[in-house]
Length: 214
Ligand code: Z5A
Ligand code: MG
Image: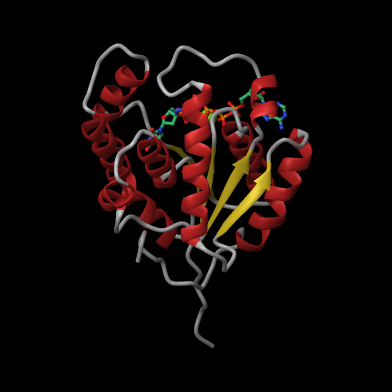
């Protein structure tokens, strides 16, 4: 009988500021590793690359850039890892990614850039098998400490980002590839809900790898 080889699944955690993405990525990473899954955790923006350093300086308000220029840099920062995401998936590794192109679309369109213009530079990136959007209410967000000093950490902008994420979710549609998770709940409850969605993908998938916005 021919050997059936599955590729690794591509799992993205998205959401607003302080929705608990990084906390949940760490918990999910541990849970996957304990289950014996070959997994790699990525985070975008990756502030360590040459492009990532420019993004970091911009986010810390140490430099200024045109809105379009920074949008393209965020996208380029994803293209820097696109081929390694693809080769890891084909080698059977599960990729867990803290934020992805949906953050780029939501944050830049919330700042007034045209939605379709914002989407274009990420077209063709590996598409996640599942995106779990951590949905935090403004009230719960406020309880998780004051905004820091970084750009975009303002209540009014976050409201527009929330609306933009809703638009992205509507566009991504059903089929289980875009899942909204209540992130106001206790950390352990959020983790259990995420695991419910990720566990079926942990041992890989037979689905062909799709491209974003195809
Ligand atoms: N950005 C963009 O404009 N374009 C792009 O293409 C991309 C990003 C990719 C930096 O991102 C900024 O870049 C971001 C979007 C923009 N701007 N904003 N806003 P980043 O990913 O580097 O941001 P960050 O510094 O990691 O923050 P974060 O991601 O927003 O936070 P988080 O990861 O969602 O939350 P956390 O660090 O896990 O938790 C926050 C706090 O809440 C912490 O004290 C936890 O202990 C607590 N927490 C977590 N979960 C819970 C629950 N369930 N209950 C109570 N408390 C909790
Ligand atoms: Mg984070």
